[in-house]
Length: 432
Image: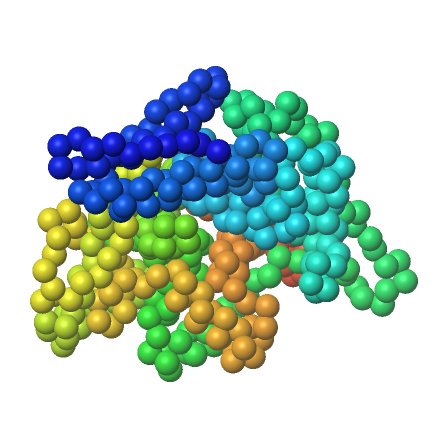
C-alpha cells in the first residue's frame, strides 16, 4: 500500500505519496490540492486508490491477452509505418479477438495449445460459448487474425517483457480440405465467382432509378471500371478526364470504426492507377455533372459542400470528411473537395449507404440473390477476360499486386467462355 501525506505551502495544501519505479526505487509523486486540508486529504486517498488499482492491473501476472492487444495497438501498431487502412483492419481484428474467451485469459497462462485451438476454431468453425454456431473463416480473415496474434505476442516478449517466449511461433494455419461429392448429380461442385449479366445490371439500374437513389452512380461507375466501393466514393471530378475518357484512382473512402469518422486515404495497394472507360460511362458522367449543377440551384442555401480535414495522431495523418450546408460557417482547417458521387442535396455518398442499397436490391430484384457491390468488380473483370483482354492489362486496371491474383480469382469467368476455349481444339484437329 502506497503511503502519503499532505502539507501546506502558502495558501494551498499539497498531497504527496511514494510509488515504486521499474527498478524498485521509491519515487515521490506530488500534486496540488485546494485551500482545504480535508479536501486535499480526500484527493490524496483517491489518488492512492487509483494508483493501487492501476498497479494491480499493470502487473504482468494480471494482464490478459486483451490487455496486451490494447498495449500493442497503442504502443506499436499506431506509431508504426503501416497504412491507415491496414491499421484499421488490425484494430477491428483486435476487437474481435477480445470478444472470444482467449481475450480474457491471463497472458502468463496462454500456451501454444490454447492459441492453436483458437486458430483451428476460426478455421473450421464450431460452437460458441453462448451455444451459437460459428462458420469457418475465409483464408483472408485467417491470415489477418494470425498476423495480429504473431505481431502482438512478439511485442509481449520484446520490448514489453511480459512473457519470456512467443507461443504463436508454434501455431500453424491448418487449411480446410476441399471435399467433393463424387456421387453428386450436380454438373459442377466448385463455387464460381459471382457475376451478373448485362440484363441483370439493367434491372439493377431500373430499380435504383425508380427509387431515385444516389447509389445509382457508384454502381454504374463500378460496373464500367471495376473500382472498389471505397475507390468509387472517393473519386473527385478532378480525377476524371471526360475528353480523353479515363479516370485516376488516387484515394479510397472508408468509415473508421475506431475513430468514428468517415475518412479518405490511400487505395488498398497505396498506388495511383489510371483506368480508361467507355462512351456509355462518359455519357453517364456528363449527365451526372449537369444534374449536380442543377441541384446546386434547386437547393440553394440548403445545398451541401464537402470538405476534408487533416488530423495528425501518433505520427499518422488522417483525412476526415465532412458535409456542411452552404450557410454553415466553415472552420479554417477545412478544405473543399468535389466528390463525384453525391446525394441530391450535395452531401457525399458514403460506402456504407451504397452497401445498404445493394443489400436492398439483392432482396427486391429477381436474379440478384447473390449480389453485393463487389460483384460489379468481378463482372467487369469477367467481361474483359471473356472479351479477350490480356491478363496483365486487366491486372493493372484492377490494381492487383500481381497477375496471378487476377488469374487465380477470375480466369474461369463464365461457362460460355470455357465452351469457347474448348472448341478451339476443333479448329486445330480440323486444320481450319
